[in-house]
Length: 107
Image (cartoon, rainbow, N blue to C red; front, top):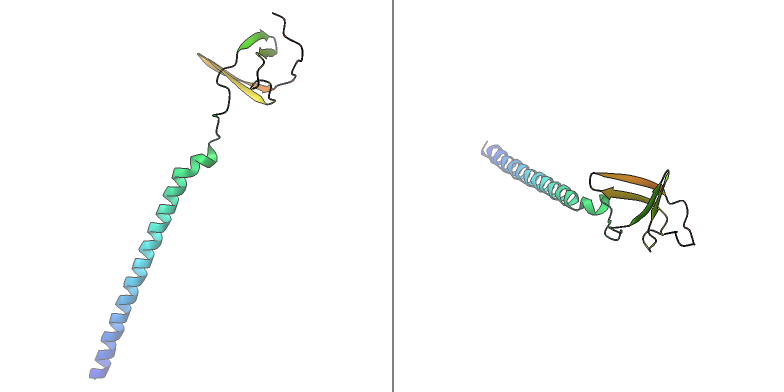
């Protein structure tokens, strides 16, 4: 009977070691996932937030007519695209620039 008791102790020790290693592996997995999520959260703004640093900050409005806004001509305003204007107390989004005039604007 002693041999059976010795086998039970060895089996019990093996089960305890196995549980310890499984618990340690589970804890490492949870820690690695947490670090991965935190890293992804921290750097997500580089993917999700566009870089507007090259945009013109100030463009001069030369004229406002019904259905039309005329901006001063420069490299930034001559690029086709959708423009947004801000002023104290408000803002607007201007649709695609319809035309670029080759002639100078009347003053």
